[in-house]
Image (cartoon, rainbow, N blue to C red; front, side):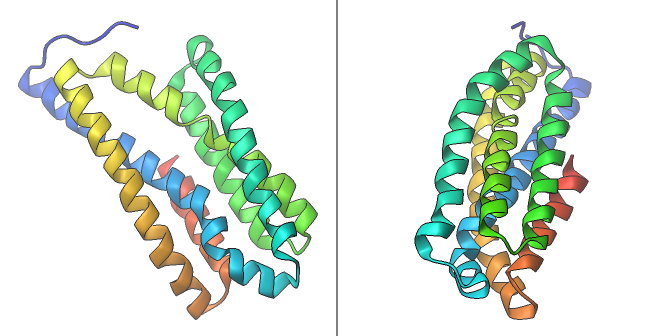
Length: 185
């Protein structure tokens, strides 16, 4: 991967915009990834299912995320990483919408496993975009800021989900995360 080596004032602004966009994308990925776990207790009550049945979706998502990381790195070498990011974020958002519409834990589990795979399409290409477009110092700063966006996304999920449950139901939290993800894509 080639790296940008110097930064003029113009490219400094571009680097800041790119970093902000990467932060937005990773924040959105956490909203659309962690909402299931944050709403788990409410999902169990609403669908009248066992904890064991509900947790399978989380386990499956972790597995497909891990396996998907291998594929996503290779995809990022063959195709535009920006398109892979957009596709991954749009697909994970659609999975969130679909989960909110379903009552079958089997179907939800399948969709959440797909969500894990689509989530894996975000980090490897995101890093590639930053490496290729940011000078070393901005890249290092960008990585710290993107990691911070993940932390903020985690906090946001655990504030958003209870609020959505209070206002309407756990399903609203999936719709809210999906809308934010689609707008970010």
